[in-house]
Length: 187
Image (cartoon, rainbow, N blue to C red; front, top):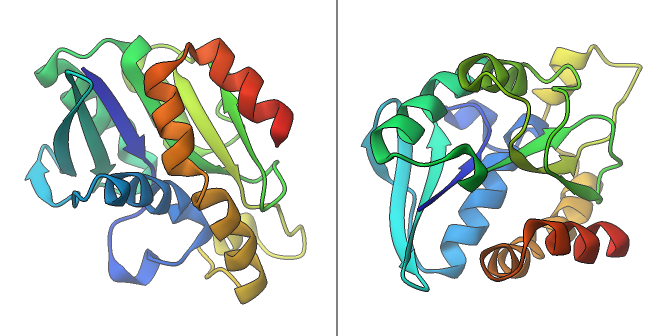
């Protein structure tokens, strides 16, 4: 069983913000399997699907992003999912918009959602897809990440989001090292 988590903030006012790229990515992957992430449990919206005889849970935590780890931990414990089978998709200020990076571990990089995940899981070693949102040093960081994407940014982001279903299919079928080699070199 695998747990695929998109990070974001609940509420309509955050739908098209930079900080909700994780929600957007997990939605596009779920859409490729014709499922909606609309069931409620443990402060999260989720849905399950069986792919290649393996249960896959898609999750969008419904606490604010800085409390995402609380929700993720409940899902891991309840469904008895190992951390090696967890994939977090999130925004990253240090990566240019229109780019992404796949990693096995790393620091939070100042991302409060990742900090909370590290506290709850007691490790930095979990798989992640970091989707770039760039960084505008002229705007306060909180205002920037909670700001709405511009049309130009959305076009660049759509190019990344459109890759996510294919990337996810590869995630299910090849080793994580091979996944990183394949996509980090392209990107």
